[in-house]
Image 1 (tube, rainbow, N blue to C red):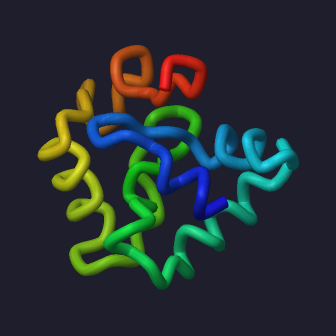
Image 2: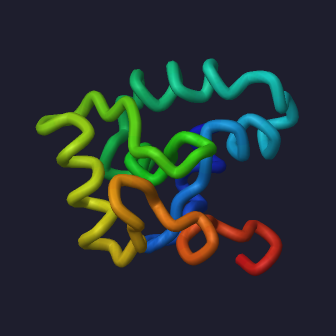
Length: 97
């Protein structure tokens, strides 16, 4: 899962569900969340780029919590509509990368 997360480009996000699917277990979205929470390689594994399927920013265990996660995403160019990421504009398209 961390290898997949490292491949998410700056300015893009993916969902816990999408990471689970790419890892070969579409029902493992919660397990992906646990892995992101336990990420020990934060500088190289951008767990802040993994969000909920409905575009909500959720579950950041780093300093500043969810607000810090949102700030990092905005600084990278991720587009928000209110409190949710605009998945149409900012979701990682694995096929294009």
